[in-house]
Image (cartoon, rainbow, N blue to C red; front, side, top):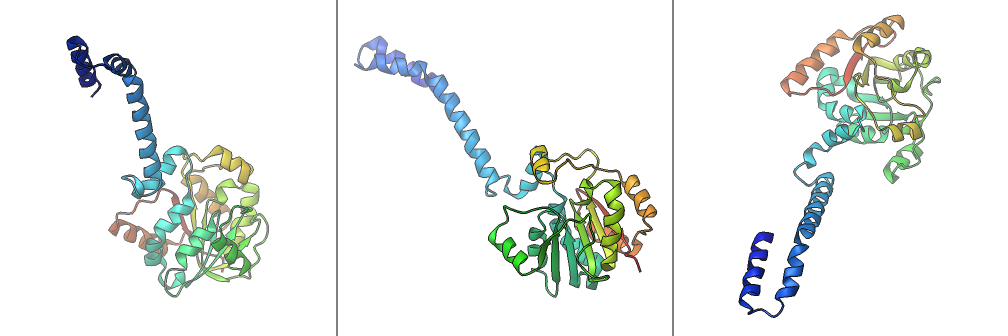
Length: 262
């Protein structure tokens, strides 16, 4: 477009028929800067539109978050709810979720029919929204340090789901926390853990969790489960794999299915 403008200006200058030719000619020299400015503005608006959830990237907002480093297995739990329902059936009627942003998981699970849900938030949630604060007041969600005994009786829940919580614990505290999670479950314990190499937002980590997450391999976790006398729930694992295959679902986190203590 700028080339056409320059050509027109030159034509007017040459013929002497346009009194403001000098002004237009001056303006044409700044057109590259104007074009660059318009391109940058357009790029900014496109990014803002995509992040608003309505643009062409709106359906893959989670993917964009992963690219930037703010990875979350809690989001993965919400994606996996239909698969978990197929794998655990009636065991999904009384669920405890443990992990950061548990209010979002609780809210999602409460939409399921005949499902009672509770949540444990391992860290302070000063920025909680009104809905989350309401769940805390009602006792549906609790803020509790999972390095200490959970405030529930044995077998209080049919299924316990954990995400984004164990990755921040050292083996010393895992030795305390994992048995507690298994103690309060009657039918199963499901753990969503990050893969080695997955990164998280460092600033958010240090401000909220005190230290960055440590992503461990599946072989490390399996050895640890054996040390704490936790066995794989083979039946649930097979059902989960079958349901995931039918729906073409591929977890972005490691998913471990364990039997509780009896």
